[in-house]
Each structure stands twice: as structure tokens, then as C-alpha cells.
Length: 376
Ligand code: R5P
Image 1 (spheres, rainbow, N blue to C red):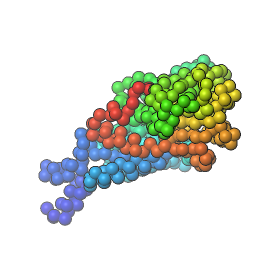
Image 2: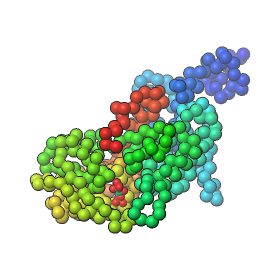
Image 3: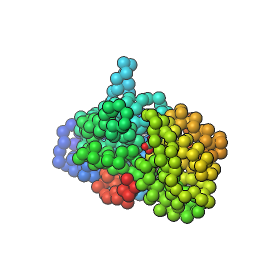
């Protein structure tokens, strides 16, 4: 065989139209760098910002470790027909690959709805599945619909969190990686599909490490749901803790009845929650802490900021009043320009942790040290 052609085929196996054992042996390392196939990162449009950062981090870790491997990255695989339907096209062969598809289900920065982003994700997953990816993992830094995991006291609501899980399974996922999902029983609703949840606790502990054993500081849980996390957090930082008794007089409205805890000598309150929606929870709690407990310095850390206008107004008001000193969020959801310009906002980049998790999963390595389970 022509040696130039032979060399080209060795470098690009997709050029081969009839495989021989010798050729296969020559390019096998390109096709099977691990038991699940070659690593492929992919993203839908709304997942692109974080996925691009993860690809960058992963590639630089490869380079630093002396690897020649060029990471395959299929960016922004979805688009919309003029009638509004979603379409996905894969610009390269995915057969036999270990694919990780990123999507930001909530993307206020792009003006696409949660439901549009879900359809793009499902279509992307199905494309990877139908075109022969060996393993398909959905990477969803923010799991939308997770709050709808049971009917509330309001009217005949379905468990939409389970419906979304069923849709993802039906689209063809083999695995899910997510970050601080609201729903504690997440593994239950995904059945036999492995779910890896990255927790925010350790990330927040690092951000607040300067307050270790500071007797003027108290950690506050905004509701019963956040109380377990606050217990672990306050024990790690040797702080006193308190818990708010929150109720919702109607959907999307939050009211704080009381805050249970010893505030004697406390000036600063550290508030941890999984998300900011309308901002009502943090706003009501901030007012209560100042009025009833003399707190003048509030520092908040949340895993997901949905960037709703109402929340921006409330956080801005607390900042202008001098009460909200720090608002720590992550890039699980692309943050809007309005939030980015809030002077007290700090955005934690999740790319390094996602890069490490994907690397461990790809090579079947243990995850226990990266995924805490204590505060679940
Ligand atoms: C509730 O269970 C969650 O942990 C958050 O506290 C809640 O979703 C925040 O919503 P909002 O900002 O609308 O009060």
C-alpha cells in the first residue's frame, strides 16, 4: 500500500473503508484509549460556556502531564428551525466514543427557556445514542425541575422531577453527572442509571475558611432543607449555627416565622442555600436577622443562582443597604450581565471539578474523595 496514504489512515481512522487487523492494531489506541471508548466532550448551546472551560482545563491537564492527546470537543450541537423545532447535527463521527454532553438547563443569559434547553438536551443525547456513541453521560450542572419532586399542599401537581428523569433515560443516558441537585432522593428517581452529584459544601468551606472558629460569626440555614448542610459546615469551621423556620404562604413567596439559635455576640451571618430563585428566602431572612438579631453583615453562598429579575432587585437592595456584603454563586447557570455587575457577586468556576470527575469516570477511577456524601 502507498505509504503516504497508509500514514494518513493511521492518523485518521475514519478514512479507512475496509479494516484489516494490521490497520486496526495501528490505530487502536485512537479508538480505545479506555474501556469505554475515546473521550468526547460535547455541548448544547446553553451548556457551551462551562463545557468550553472544562475542555480547556482538561486539555491543559493533559498537556501538563506530557500527553500528546488532543481532546475531542463537539461544541454547540443544537440549533432551531424557523418553525421553532430543535435540530441537532453531529459534525464528526461519534461511534464507539465515551461521550459527555453538557447542557445548562437554565440559561437566563441567552433567553432560551428551560423547556427549550431540555428539548435540545434530549435531542443531543438521542443523536449521540443513535450514531453509535459507546457510552452517553449527561452533564447537567443545574438539574431543573428537581424542586417538583413531590406534590405540595397546593393543587394536584405531578412529580415532574421524575418525568424529566424518565425522559433522560428514554433519550438514552447511561449516566448523569450533576451539581448540588435540590432533590435528596435523586438516585431513586434515576433507578439503575448511576448519578454522580458534586456537592457545594467543600467549595463553600474553602471560601469561608477565614472565619474558622470566629466567635462573632454564625452559620444560618434558611430552612429545614438546608439544615443538614449547615450542621456539617458549622462543625467544619467550628462556628455556632442557627436555623430559620420558613414557610410559603403561596407558591414562590417566602416568609420567615423565626430563627432558632443563639445570636449573642454575633455580628456576621453566613447563609448557605442550594439556590436563589425569586430571592424571597434570602431577602426575608436578611430582614429578620437584622431586625430580631442585630446582624449587620450578611454573606451568602448558593450553588445555583437562577438570575431572575426579582432576585436581582432584592439582592441589589440588600447590597445598597450595606447588609449583603458577599454573594457567592457558581457558574452552574450562566450568570446575567445584571448579576455580574453586582459588586458583591463572586462566581466560583466549576470547570476544574467537572474536569477531574470526568477524567476519573472515563478511566474507571474511584470518585469518593471528590464527591462528599455527608451533607446530602
Ligand atoms: C427551597 O427549598 C430552596 O432550598 C431555596 O431556599 C429556594 O428555592 C429559594 O427560592 P427563592 O429564592 O424563590 O425564595
